[in-house]
Image (tube, rainbow, N blue to C red; front, side, top):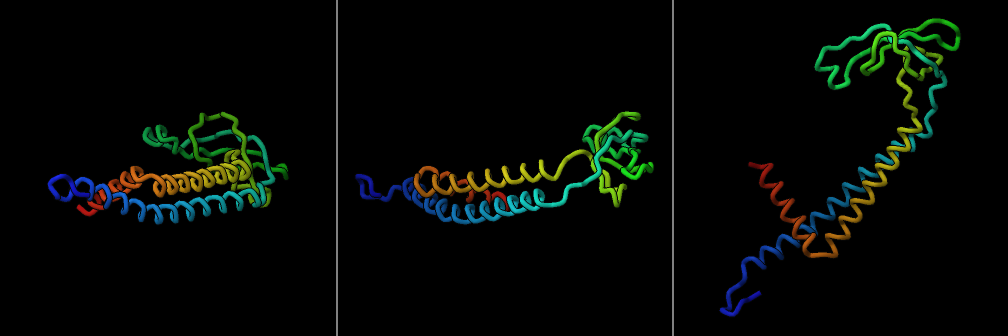
Length: 170
């Protein structure tokens, strides 16, 4: 644009350029969001369709292996003992901070009882993945729409991406 003196308004040119750049970048953001969202949803469907661990039971914590840092980060390895569906005693290592003698629910494969893990079912994790993947798809689509529809959002996106490029190369 030109002002009264016939000079090009620098701020307007920067605004236009950053909005155009933001609109172009939004196509890449949409593509990445769609790919990531779809992959997370596919993972969720895979987990929902995978065979659940048939063995369920209670295990007793017999030993804990961790230092103070691991304990704060909930990154300890606890040894547990449980009775398998065949009546034999098994032990396995479980991640988490527990106390010795504590009883915790577990899942395990009856053919390989040493594969015991905490009672997090594939179904719950699969549903969570599908919800998160759907939110990623929705958010990336909404952001794409806003950037394409509103020049201010496009300019914000363009300036943000330009700042990231400059910051990451310096």
